[in-house]
Length: 225
Image (cartoon, rainbow, N blue to C red; front, side, top):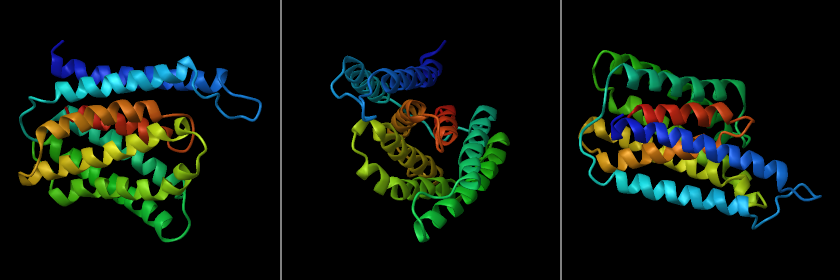
């Protein structure tokens, strides 16, 4: 297996391993009040693993060159991303009431449609349009704003860290993907954010509202490589 094929697979598998560590942490390291016992060996293992993985991906992305990829694998990944975003937006309301929550749902539906069109273009070997690929970036930005209040009010870092970092890297990944269509792309940053988003989103896919959003978005990001 070539290195360029091994890295996306390793990001997904390591992300799933980190997810299992997190689930184990919540099963075995919770006190009588329902909060995690801080400073356990397992918690430190999760943090050290994540730091090592991100450093590895940063090193692997230093010599990346090229442009936006098209083809059947990329198209399939975009369809998977469309399902993850569209399913979540249609099935659940936003975290915040009013404008932000409504905007989150609208952009989720629009982003899903744009990714379906992008998949059609990629399958035909054509580069999708800039504005089409910009829509998911806007969705992830609003997703960050929609969840910020809940994350900032959470009493423990472990409960939101991977969701926060996964959202941030998906925002950057989708931005660099869109920028690449108008010759403003940064191949090294695109590769790193795709790998980081794949790992972090896979690790963030705890059971709940956003499980499929993060897991399928991880597959979308990694398929771009």
